[in-house]
Image 1 (spheres, rainbow, N blue to C red):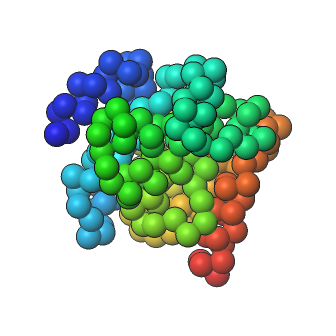
Image 2 (cartoon, helix red, strand yellow):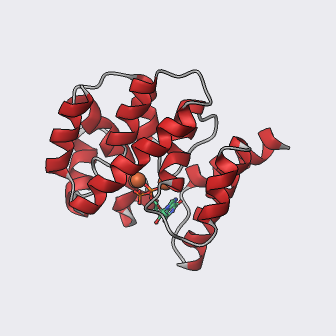
Length: 187
Ligand code: DGI
Ligand code: FE
Ligand code: FE
Ligand code: FE
């Protein structure tokens, strides 16, 4: 199963993105060990989370409409935000993975969302602490991820928001809802 997915994925992604996907797989397994999850499912979600990442903006928009994804204002001007939602549908219809946990983990891996499941959180955080990431503060979050999972999530979300703000990019409402939810459940 995993091997077949890897073969197909390799054809869809450039080398850098494929290596990243394998790194997220490793990180997700490490994180997943702390919870009682089907590791096979975690592996599939991690491998496929960025399967739509190498699509061009116009391709992402076309596929979003094809799959009935309602494209909001922010996604219209930042179509790369659609690589999660479109990737979720590709995992279902191109890879034949019919699983709600995997679908949602891929769908929300960029923005997060409120009421995320732990399964979704694992993929979100694994993407963030993946070994190929080298932004400021990532080492601290890597360490934190295995000490205090929830706090590491908030740190990741804060870091993403800081990045987005520093570049004067629009913040997607889901990212804000994700952060507020993390704050409230942590508080
Ligand atoms: O696909 P990856 O690079 O592995 O990681 P990702 O899917 O988490 O995407 C990270 C990028 O998404 C990063 O450049 C920050 C951006 N991002 C996350 N939330 C938002 C956002 N960009 C905008 N404009 N608005 C958001 O709310
Ligand atoms: Fe991504
Ligand atoms: Fe991410
Ligand atoms: Fe990623």
